Length: 271
Image (cartoon, rainbow, N blue to C red; front, side, top):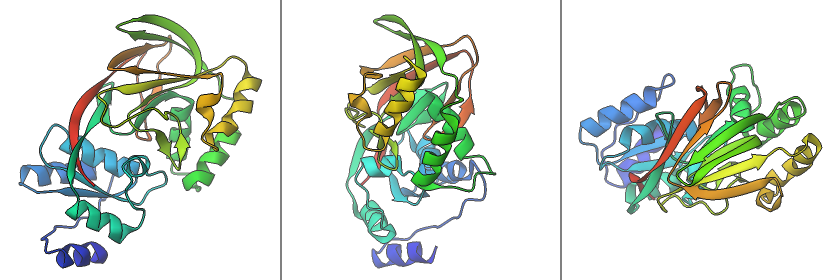
């Protein structure tokens, strides 16, 4: 809090600084700030905090600033925001405003990546209170421990162009290029192109899948035969069983049909 007050005072800004107390608190604080006429709302935290604040500010004129301080920092990396707190805070206060897209799945907004399947499974385990590991090492350990026993689902993917059936390790809806921690899933995604990249990592054989996962670490998964991508404005994903999904790393339980869409230019950011 002291750094935030010192930097904003140096920049000639009057700022209210709050520490969140529980899940959803950042969203409530941002909504209150927006209603109270705030010029800018800065989320200081990880992808979950950024998602909460962005959800409260979307479809409005108050821009979002980001000071990355989480395990993945996916959107912050996408926007080129410094990992140094004072630099990021200064850039947010003095930065130019631009508009980026937001995605929506099952009624929940996301600003970086949403996913169904294995990445949602890992997100749930990563966010569990009993998980002691954070950062890239934590993801790597959970992935290695989970992949052999994970059962891939069969999905129906419905777009305005038609319907396809796939057996997939994961299905990602990417506004940005990476999950976080430089783990790239959609190299062609752009946060302001008015579309989401629908990425499918198919399961052709368990051995083939396991042998390809190392490509996540060296950012070459898109060169594997199991990876495919297409740009969509809307899509529905169906399964015979209820699907777990995540929005910007927050795991959620959904039904047997999940509908997703993009909201072009829905969020203003200061970078």
